[in-house]
Amino acid sequence: MRIVALAGGIGGARFLRGLQAAAPAAEITVIGNTGDDITLFGLRVCPDLDTVMYTLGGGINEDQGWGRTGESFTVKEELLEYGVGPGWFGLGDRDFATHIVRTQMLAAGYPLSAVTEALCDRWKPGVRLIPMTDDQVETHVVIDDPEQGRRAIHFQEWWVRLRAAIPAESIALVGAGDAKPAPGVLEAIEAADVVLFPPSNPVVSVGTILSVPGVRAAVAAKTVVGVSPIIGGAPVRGMADACLTAIGVETSAQAVAELYGPDLVNGWLVAEADSGVRVDGMEVRSRPLLMSDPEATAAIARAALDLAEELA
Amino acid sequence: MRIVALAGGIGGARFLRGLQAAAPAAEITVIGNTGDDITLFGLRVCPDLDTVMYTLGGGINEDQGWGRTGESFTVKEELLEYGVGPGWFGLGDRDFATHIVRTQMLAAGYPLSAVTEALCDRWKPGVRLIPMTDDQVETHVVIDDPEQGRRAIHFQEWWVRLRAAIPAESIALVGAGDAKPAPGVLEAIEAADVVLFPPSNPVVSVGTILSVPGVRAAVAAKTVVGVSPIIGGAPVRGMADACLTAIGVETSAQAVAELYGPDLVNGWLVAEADSGVRVDGMEVRSRPLLMSDPEATAAIARAALDLAEELA
Image 1: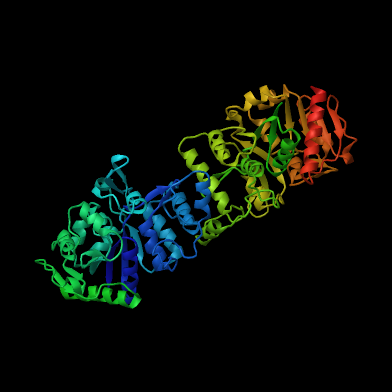
Image 2: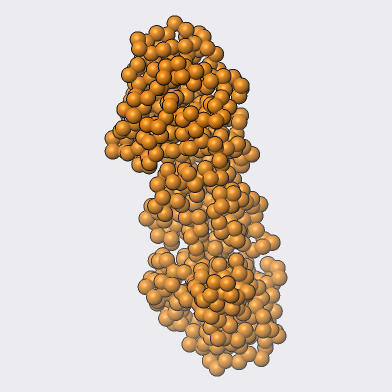
């Protein structure tokens, strides 16, 4: 079986680990969000790709869900001694090595997809991990800052530094219009038996990947099953509510299903608390959705695959 | 009093610390060798500038004479996990931060002299530290490698990886012909009461600085006192003998004095074992030259300044 998953960071990575357990023989291609990517200290950082790579490769800090296990922060502390920030982004020493390798390869002319493949040579995540695009696409957020007025800031500044505490007036994907899917993205989708949307952020993770020209149409042609990232009116993890509010969508499993729409998503898994969700043309199933441990997560993935098989 | 010193790495930095003790009220400008600079992992590394900065700023690893005190090597170990080397160059985590800041500033368009000044804002070395040039100049060494045949390698590969075990057939300063002295270099020399040559390597440290067009002539116009880096036919530290052999000069205090020559150097301090050194037109004094502790080092610097005063 060939599976394609569109993944953001922590939630997507954890779901993928469950998917591997649920379908050990499947050929899984993960199309990773790169809209969160940011250049810090002159180094290119790809938080979502790395979270997937570290999680599936056994290097993730399990407690926080991002970054490396056994991490130290000497480089960052030294940079701050030089007065060089930002201090709000948690780059550890082990993580720095990843960004140094990536930046060096990008500077040598390798596209991000080739760099990601090279990094995965070490981590052996057991999936094929492809960035959504080799072009630079960055999610920016317009806020009305009480101190500095209305301005656009990088998604990471809003998400990590401000913890989304200042409402987003709008979210813009800079560069998406001209971006091309990375090599292998459209081919993997076309060859897939099923496309899965993990419970990743529907706006700044899955939505971002779908914004790359050509991806939405390719996905829409397949059997697509999504897992709701909203349970009982609140995000399972993270601050998806702040992103949904920014685009005028209610924080509910029903509203996210409508946002994706039946032309794109054929099957929709919601939590038992959301069993009343109904969308014409979309098959909705309710079941436990908390990824509380590997077994529970694998069961969610299995339910998604079962629904896909039924819909195919 | 205005003093200019042309400095390499470890030996130069230690001498400078003695000079500060010997002349606490003097205005000291250090012109640093950048021929050893190398780009590693996409980061610009300036070993000699950093050794001076860390030594005078209190951050040096005193035992080894280079690198930071309390250093860890997490980033380097992680890079090697990715298969990314070289592993033979000892870049620690604290040190990495310096190179990240430098590389980021260079990429932003700042010249190396401005970058060095910015880094010194943190370290406050108590001297004005200027790189010999803002242009890229690199010392390369031609060797006849038993395995790979005759080839030119970066000085650091010869010095650090090979420990100079394969003889250098020649030493070339790539880029020196077109290099311009960094802003402030010629002005500092012209304004100096005395120019000192610490016991740095006469070929790849002091010699390299003198190779930048305009520097030798500016220095020659001043009262210059040098401290012999050779005691009793052997380098005090390092492998200066391998560099001298490469340019056909004997490893002796006499031969190094002749290499500099009386047109350039007016006073020459040698060790007591070398009291027989004589060069027409050069005032030679013998005294203890081992920089065994701060007091002994300060006494050497004081002797150099006394000789300069006498010659002025």
